[in-house]
Structures are given as structure tokens and as C-alpha cells.
Amino acid sequence: GAGVSQSPRYKVTKRGQDVALRCDPISGHVSLYWYRQALGQGPEFLTYFNYEAQQDKSGLPNDRFSAERPEGSISTLTIQRTEQRDSAMYRCASSSDRGYEQYFGPGTRLTVT
Amino acid sequence: AQSVSQHNHHVILSEAASLELGCNYSYGGTVNLFWYVQYPGQHLQLLLKYFSGDPLVKGIKGFEAEFIKSKFSFNLRKPSVQWSDTAEYFCAVNPPTRGYQKVTFGTGTKLQVIP
Image (cartoon, rainbow over all chains, first blue to last red; front, top):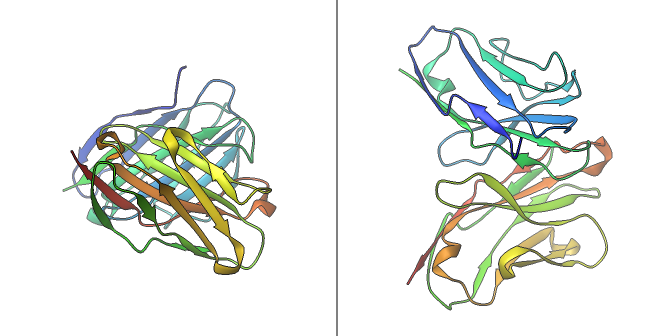
């Protein structure tokens, strides 16, 4: 595609529900990153994929958060048993190689009520 | 772990004024440095980057940044701002030894340019 796309753009969910956030990277990009951005803060690294391999998940805050990229393209970030503190903008980025410029998607604004 | 400090959270300038946004980082080794910008309603996008070489880096739309290693700084500058520069600006750092970009962002500076 022309750019990184994310869906949904906005998600409102009730506390305790599971949510799945999707990222579709630029075609051919091997590297994919997830970030979380709280209000008034900069994006915070969550996890990194090289093709389908999750090579760094050190930024995932706890075991309610997980991510996958089974075919090395589309990625899903899943948050189980959501809590109000999970409310944030979730951003995805992709790059053509591990050390190259990252291209960001529009983000998913998650609100947990 | 590396960290990034942006001292100005909100800057208001009149058109044609000069801009300098401060960025300091804490990391003892070699770093890659970035400035990202997010215009209202748009994606976060790369403004400019420094990997090595000339410490004065030029980016898009007339922006430039200077890497001063001794001061651990990478300040963003523009001689004359326009209303269209209204946006949020993020400084970011990444140690290149990882082989991929585990980027640490600052908290951002919101720039408002008044016509």
C-alpha cells in the first residue's frame, strides 16, 4: 500500500474486554514496530518484529499485552482484560530494513471506560 | 538506558520569527538522532536525522539541526517560521549497535505559529 495503515482508528471499550489492534505495514517492509503514546508524552517503544520474528518485546508493559506477525506482514497487538490505564494512542511503524527510517501509521486511539 | 529531554513543552511564535527547540539526550555511546513532526491530523513523520558525518543536518521545509556531542544536544532550528509549521515536534534517539531502531522519544514540543 501507499503507507502504513492501522485499524480501527478509534476504539472505545469497557474495562475487562479484550481488544485487537491491527497494523498493515508498507508492502515489502521487513521491520515493524509498535509504540504507545499517552497524552502529553512521546511515543514509547513496545515491541519489534523482523519479518515474522518478534525480536524485542521488552517494552510490553505486562503479560496482558501481546503481539504477533504470523506471515511477516500484518501485525496485531492484543490487549487482554483492558484497564483504564491502557487508554492511549497506539502507533505502528515499519521500515525497509532494521536500521532504516521508520514510517508511521495514523495510530489507533484506544479509550477504556 | 537512554533518555531524551525536550525543555519546551509549548512554544508560541509569530510568523517570520526564528525557531530553536532544545533537545538533550543521555547516552554515553554513539547514537542516531532524529526529529519527528506531527502536523494536525496527520501521521508522525521524519523531519531530519543524524547518523554520522557533518553535525549540521538539513531536513525538509527549511529545518536544520546541529549535533553537539560535548553537550549531548541536537537542537532544531528554522530561521523564519510559517503558520504551516504549527505542529508537535519530537526529538528521538537510538543507539545503532542494536541493528534496529529501538527509538526513545522525548515528550514533544507543541509549536503554535500565529499569522
